[in-house]
Length: 274
Ligand SMILES: [Zn+2]
Picture 1 (cartoon, rainbow, N blue to C red):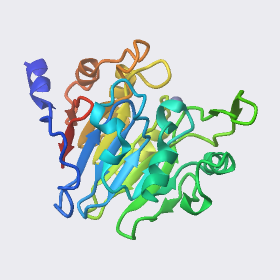
Picture 2: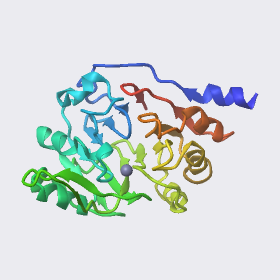
Picture 3: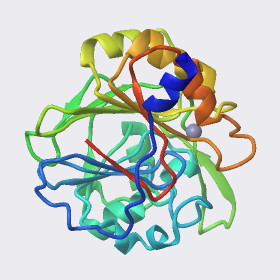
Picture 4: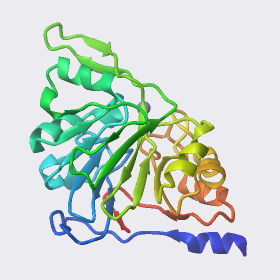
C-alpha cells in the first residue's frame, strides 16, 4: 500500500516541446530539463535562466535544443563548476544572448582569461552571496557543493590540453518574483550543511543529482531530501547520460519512503510547471 501511495506521488510531466517564447509573463514557473544538469527556467515574470548548459554534444539533449538559438531570449547563465558536462556551452550561450554569467569567481576568471567570456558579462560573487543581475525581484544565492571544479581546455596556441583553476564548486538557490525557490545542487556529495540550507532557505523545488560515482547516488539523494532538505518538490538529474551514472529515479523515489516530497521524473526535453 505504501509503495502504491509512493507511486501515486510520482508525477510524470507531459511532454511539451517547442513552445519557447510563448511563456512570457504567464505567472507560472516553467522548468525544462535538457539532460545531465542542464535546465532552462522561465520565471513568472518571463525571465529566462539557463543552468549548466552542456547541450551541443550532450547525447541526452533533444536535437532541437542542440541549436542554442532554440533557448529563447536568455537573461542569465548560472554555472555550478568547471567540468565539461556542465560548462561546455555556458560561454556560448552567455555571449550569444549577452546574458550575465553567475559562476564561482575563480572559474569566471579562467573563462575570461581564455577569451571565452567578456568581462562585462561576469557576475562577481561567492558562497553566501546574493546576486540580482536580472532585476531586484530575482535573488540568486550561491551555496556550498561538495565536489571539485577544474576547467580543462585545449590551448589553441599550443594545441595541447591544459587544466586550469575552476574555483570551488557551488549550488544555487534562485528565489523568483513570487517567492518560489529553486535549489540547483550542482554536482555534490553528501554534506551535513544540506540540513542548514533546508532550514534557512526552505527551497520549494530541489534539482538533485542521483547518478552516483561523481555525486550522491539515488539512495543518498533520497536521504538528503527526506532527512535534511525536505522540499515540496524534487526533480532528479545527472543520471543515465553514461552507464557510470547508474542511479535510477525509481530507487530515489522508493528511498523517500513516506516523505511528502513530490517527485517529477522528467525525460530530457520535458517540462514541469509550478
Ligand atoms: Zn562535476
